[in-house]
Image (tube, one colour):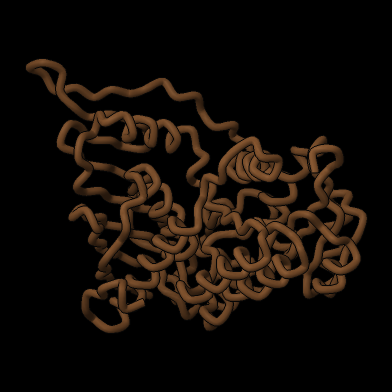
Length: 368
């Protein structure tokens, strides 16, 4: 495998494929070759292939896998279809880089990892929040013991007005959920990783749809909705189709008696920049952005701001780091950073919040 470039095929030709996955793989051109792209609307696949100089475009994904025999498949489709495409690619003999969330349900995620184990291939979930320089530094600080016992944390991912309007995010039949699955999954995954991945045992939460299904007459940019680049053939947006939450709030109990509060929104009347991640420990606290250690020095309280190099500034730079990492994993140079048990822990927690909102009570996650 080390003697020739790995062949990569892309399933899906939407925003995240054009802005994240394809540029990330192209940045590793000495090690990988993007050989084909599929989209159910074949014309979109052809346009994406021409845009990125990809040799083959398909409207039949199974034919693409059979003809190209890729080593790696990037799954960049709406959440509900991740399971079908990922298992199909694994069974075709490819390793898979799947967009987050790995699936639209915990049960589907379990089936996908079972397929990876059955085929002897790797299912790598694109939890790119772990690759940010601040997140890596925060994990190092937590691992050093400087926080002591981490007993409470908050993770928030707020957009004031940032509903994704170019695709299928706003329709439950395709996405499975709204901002909790889109934004909350990144915030919670990174937080649990920093904390050492304690198991979530119970979830309580509520979801709201208060603003995004209304016509407020506001002007918002694609960048506001998480797409600074990569939108070329947007699907016509119909607000009447909106049937997911626009804001979610959850409270999680962990196996070590720690607790987490998590919030995510696409539309909420909040100040710009509100949110972020904080961790409270018995020896110190941590704020993720800007990265700040909160503690004591002798008789004085101090705030310490480590000088962490900024991220590259390239749109979706986490995908570039994820692609680099995956290649190194396949070459035996690194251990996979996003593990099955961690992904399933996050999926159980998020599904628990959705179930709690539907049932009006705390959910013990062994019920899932």
